[in-house]
Length: 83
Image (cartoon, rainbow, N blue to C red; front, side):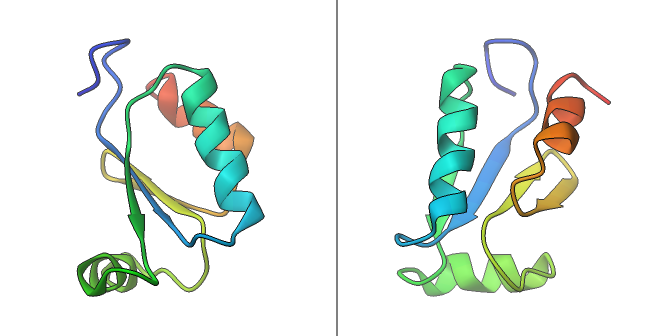
């Protein structure tokens, strides 16, 4: 859990050239959230985890047990509030 507001672990699957990934990272950073970023093009392990989660495109973010594909602001805010 993040110390800020009892937020579950956040893992972000990205690539270096993805504009939506940059927007998602900024969204999380603006909220002061801690997250782990894994580049699926640079790490075989990251790619394996990404595929296990059903990833087909980036960004993909895992918040606790929930998976969000793409930058879905409403869904992210809902999960970050505990819903």
